View 1 (cartoon, rainbow, N blue to C red):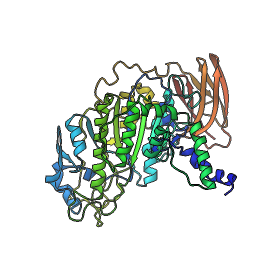
View 2 (spheres, rainbow, N blue to C red):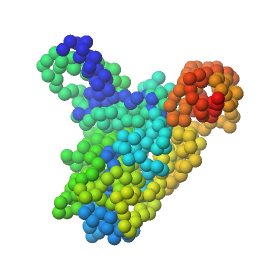
View 3 (tube, one colour):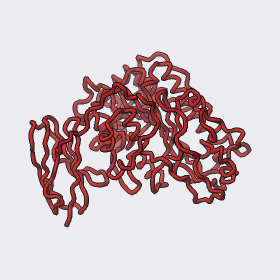
View 4 (cartoon, rainbow, N blue to C red):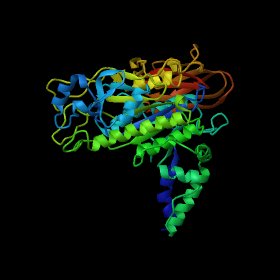
Length: 531
């Protein structure tokens, strides 16, 4: 193979998956992610960390969290996969609800006051496509919206508005977000860039730490691969700080073997304990698309789903114990989610089909333990079309974490969600009171109106007037789907009032948003184009 052909075919993949630590390679998150961009500003002085555990495939929440108080209805709806009532694990401080018998690790965390169960989490008009539902959860959009940034990316973009320009910096030398997995996700995508990086697997992580790489074949293509790896490592801005953080930890707690989720969380604990200022970590564990053979043939407490739940439970318990061992558990909160749940009634293949709402877990020493919500409503005679009705909108959990864990002002939190969603958000009892005591968030947008446009409504063009306090000023036009239509300003200004023209030729009629950002100050102006 010619060098040119090899590079053309191989370099994009290599650029995305640089070698990092023992089987996990590191790559930069797309800096466009709104969630990532929100997390990058660093204006809020906090060392709090969020760990997101994605359960890919659509987890069956009714066999994970069993409604003991309504057991007869539960059993009648899924006689071929139901967990025996006498095998359900009780939850400390919660009556009438229990856990799958394989989840002893999470049961212990409830006993220790370090776990929270939130019942029936979902959103209106749920989508049952794996890909679309995942996008909805990662972007925090409505089911009929397409938003091209992630909820965590928008947060990071708020905190670190100019990323990646000027980063790493003396105040933020570390990655803003880290994902363990082969691809960076929409979750950390900011409005114009991805705010994180990814470590593709544990092997590449340990390769980075140990200064080694996987062997390459003794062929011309192998030599090219070795060269690309060298270039990749040389240009990886964050590899040194990751390596230094990892190498500063010489001892960790005990993790279960043969458990890929535990392998990922072990790396996360090591980097947190090693002193990285990274605010968001994301790990993923798949296999939850259990349409058939969900349970064992002779014992419904065994089988594929039981194995998955045990690995999740054991991994989270080991991770929490390790954080305590490293004296950093007060800095960390974790959450699980799956793109959707499963139907109430099981199918004839001893499995379950795509459904709507499902339970979520939050864990950590700063979690307000117990259960939020009640057992889901189950019809006396459930049909194959019956879904668990939503009790809590998943975006309320996100917004509560941003406000009560990352300590943002409520008005700032509202601005990080797509239009028409912030009015639906609830502040939930999931974080202990006082978690943000002593942390002063940056002031929200000043009371002054800093951006206007005239005329409004307009037909083809409008003049945008804005007032900047000086320094870097950014103005972008966004449509109702969250897509950036145009960037009008992205440069340094002296303090003063300025005008810019927005020509909407070729754009359909409707609502558009002019988003103004100047340091920690943000405002959004709604504009209407008419015929």
